[in-house]
Each structure stands twice: as structure tokens, then as C-alpha cells.
Image (cartoon, rainbow, N blue to C red):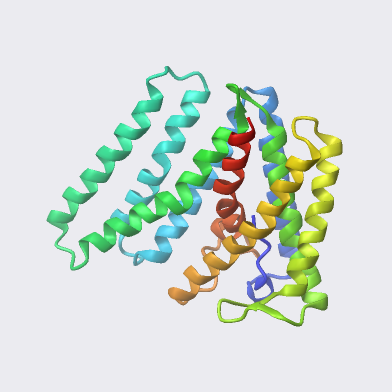
Length: 286
């Protein structure tokens, strides 16, 4: 969930951006916290939609506008593991877990088969970009599902904590970088992202990690601080990697769904990139 350092370049006035932000935050918090009272169903639906939209935007970047088939293939193959795992956590029979592997493999091999008839000049490039979308965008949300369901029961606290840490890092880095930033972090990729902003974002992220340790008892202070480090380091890389992707295709935003903020992938680039590392740590300490 990224506060893009190039936000000032994104269309829409301050009022429009603020209104979008309020709506976005309300939906996110309502879906994450409210799911505690509905067996996790709003959480599964919310992040399923976010995953699908992010995959569609990624596909829109790497495939031409007219290539609807590969866009759909990217969304379907990338979303399959999340859907099956989400159904499993919502009391789907145990056979759902192996079905994740089977369905993903069948869909992938059907994609290979379709390329035989498509007569594309770059068939393996097409398949590769579809599978890259599944790895880059789809699988992190699968890991989020595993984080949210500890011992088979939905618990909003860790998901909410990771969300707040990411928001804190992105927002503080953007504000402080805009106010005090002088030293570019990686000028060829994201000219407005600065070391000063990154350090400021890290400080407030660690402060938020301490606050979360006081608020939630499911993790120790040390664990929240480790997650804070992962958010600062890999969340920042996630923002840069998505910027690199967009620059490779000479576009400014991944989409236009969020007025004044760009696309869904723009807002979740840091969160997505951080998830594999946070999930690895969380599943290890469990």
C-alpha cells in the first residue's frame, strides 16, 4: 500500500485525493477488522478483489490493450491459488489444498496449448509474463491468507498491523521526503524518492511497531520491530520495483481506478513485495 513519491504527478486535486484516501482507508479497515465477526469472509472477499484488480492492472501494463486473452489468463492463473485457499479457510473440504496445485498446473499447460494456435511471435514471452504476474502479484496475497488464519481461525491483528506499518512507512517517507528530501535514493527509477524521506519513514514505522506491541498481545515487541524492518526495507523495494516496471513500459500509473492516486497496484506495490518476507518470519515463529 504505497504512497507513491511521484504522487504529485498523478492527476486530481488535493480534495479528490483526500476523498479517495478516506474511502479507501474505510473499506480496508472495515474489511480487515469487520471480518473478525463474520468468520473472515469480508477479508477473503476484500483481498480477493484487490488481488484480481492488481493482476488485471499488471496485465494491462505488460500486454497490449487489445490482448484481452492474456489479460484474462493472467488474472485467472494468478487468482486461482488465492481462491482455493480462501475457500479452504472458509471450511472447504481438505481436498481444496491439493486442488490449488492441480488447477494451477492445468491452467498453465492449457495456456501453453493455446499458444500453439495463437501464432504469436513470442509465445514463451507471453506465458512467462502471465506466470510472472502470478508470482509477483498473486502468490503474495496467498501468503497474506496464511498470515490471517492462525490455527485455522481468522485473526485480524497481524494483517491490520502489517497494513498500518506499510501505510506509516509510505506516508511518512512521502511527507518528510517532500519537505526535507535532498538526496535521491535511486534517481533513475524514482527521482523524487529520497534518503531523508526513507529514514523518516523508518523512524515512524518503528514507532508504530512499538505502539502495535502495546495494542496487540499476539506478537512480542521484538516481533513487531522485525516486521517493521521488513516493511521499511522490502516495502521500499516494492515501490521501486513497480516504478521500474512502469518506466520499462513508459507509463505513469498502473491504472485510474483510484482518482488522484492511480491504480490499485500503485497502492499495494509495497505491501505485495513485503508479504513474502513477513510471511516467512511469521510462519517461522509460529
